[in-house]
Length: 63
Image (cartoon, rainbow, N blue to C red; front, side, top):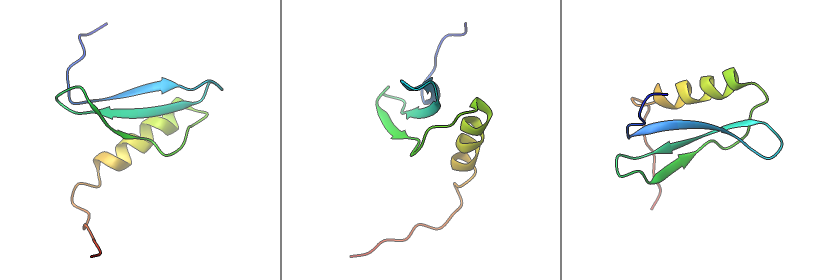
């Protein structure tokens, strides 16, 4: 297995055997987690792709 480098996404299984992801920052701290679990690992991977591809999306805020 390759050495883990940060930042990175980790795919893991929950207690029911479903997949979820965690995003770790360069300092190895968890900063994001999938909002749901997935039966298929490919669906979990697709969810990561959606997040990665949203970099140019607008950011809104309220005061």
